[in-house]
Image 1 (cartoon, helix red, strand yellow):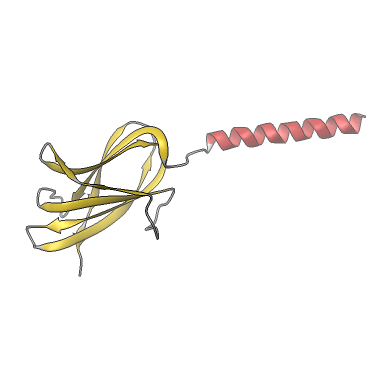
Image 2 (cartoon, helix red, strand yellow; image 1 turned 60 degrees about the horizontal axis):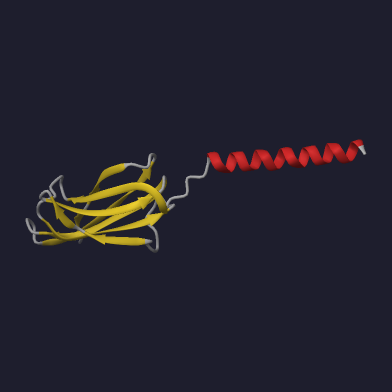
Length: 132
């Protein structure tokens, strides 16, 4: 009987420890949170020349993914082309931007990994460069 109690206690302790560690590390990116990302594509730190901008977003990745979970067209907000993603949770994302830079009359693209650490409103610069 003592052996059974010890086994039961050990099993219960493992389950409790596993559930605690899951909650602490539960940073699953994606929809269902309160974060808003306002993404601005910039080429050589200039955003005003980017037309037809679009930002793609992938959840739970740090490197360029093979597919994206969502996308948003850039709209001009206070003179700045901005793509907005709302309702996001904390976690790791990959952002990829495309557009056309009128100052060099070329298509531009590029991306970066980004981690949301707090569910709040955040502005992110997505660096883009001309394609070859």
